[in-house]
Length: 306
Image (cartoon, rainbow, N blue to C red; front, side, top):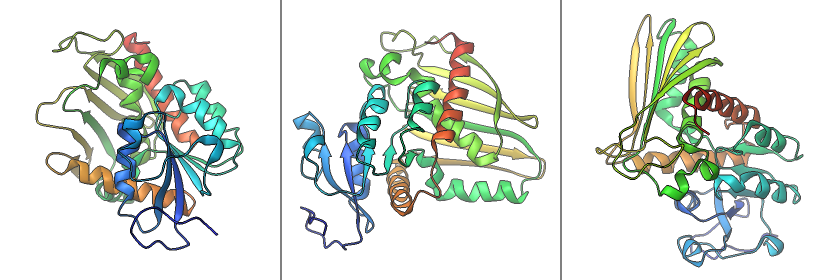
């Protein structure tokens, strides 16, 4: 028998109970998204920060005294993903880990050997407009692909401590892995080559190894061209867009854009967690994470970034 939730909503015994590990910006975002789910709930939160825990409507717990749960959602800082995931694997429960699940390809591959199901939180796979676009591409409706262009544009940069490549992997690993996973998932093609340029303009004191803008040219197998634009500063507000051009048609989608971008992300995070609870059939695997990080690393190499 599962222990009851501290929330006021009635919950079915079939609810999937997650332990949220890390209640910072992204952890709190996951928690808010799941408040309206009828399938998944945050049963407890593990975080050393009192201020962070206060942002999540779930009781606090410690790793060595968890209540009965069905799985884990890892949203600690990126540099801690591997160590925390390895510790959690000892419980034998499935793990949904924020991206990138490791700062290096070797770290990410090591997670595959833990003996538990690990799903990586590439939430774009759960945006209805992108799923419909993927179906159109797969059906041949747009014809032979010519170009797939992806952009992730943040309104303002995160704190300098987060931007440190040692902590987050820097702009290409932190932001770019989303775009590389999206390119592969939308097209069913692998990344063959990556070349890039970095902007040198910025308002804040520069963070060594983390330019405010990166433009990457991508070659997908079969000769399809790709483009990835990453920007730390976009005054109109946080925006994510994709444009696909084929010989028989084209489509552009700004799937995250002001003023309702947060709603799109929340709905995708909720759908992702519910998929994870059902077994993760639509989510990203460790192999997907390795492929995205490998492409990001090739981009960093061309830019000379750590």
